[in-house]
Length: 281
Image (cartoon, rainbow, N blue to C red; front, top):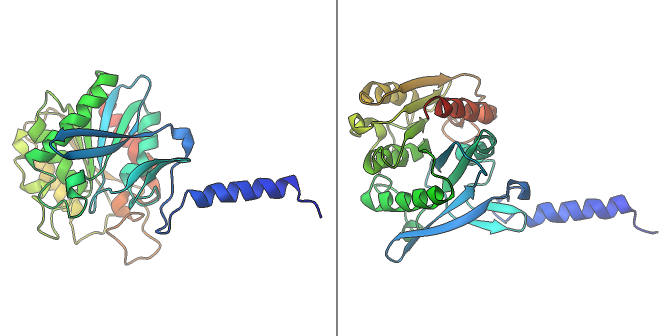
């Protein structure tokens, strides 16, 4: 019996999907995003990669720091960017980047530097070494468009966003977004509420889901403390986001796909963040 055209087409689509997956369940992002993985170097014998979704005429650049143990294993693939240990279903910063781009921003999602891939990022996110890494990313993006730069961190990624906003200063960083900041848990970083936030001289959005149940890391309490300490920011806003859904498994409250990462409302959260940035550039 001859093979029907629709059957052949279905097989092609299935093969494309399977080739976009790896054994750990990672999924490659669609080719339509026209995204590239860029490698830069600012420190001797060390490189850092970032997934770069460049806008043709950006109103600002966003540099996004994923939470957890950090992003590892990103690469260009036949069907788009592969996000290694943080596939598109498992990170707010990765899931939201398309919304940021459609709202007029160039977006860089930062990977773990090459000298840290065999260990954790604990204590490194706030370091002078990482400052050099991020400065190199900023320089690359600024060559494409000389527009304001905003740092955005989610969960443990807020450690990098807040610290490097302070380290780099307002000449290089013009705003910061701290999403679901943590204030407790494993003592491997300087938590954002413990940082010298009076040295933040740029607009700052501090956001947490209103129904975030992650008591282990206390993001709602952290947001309040952070907002109170941003005394020198020209516009510091604390916002408790409404509409986030909980994970289907109720015991999972501190991971992605829970209210901690805005549940099924990630894109609405990204729109809210986009609006704040537009109001402050």
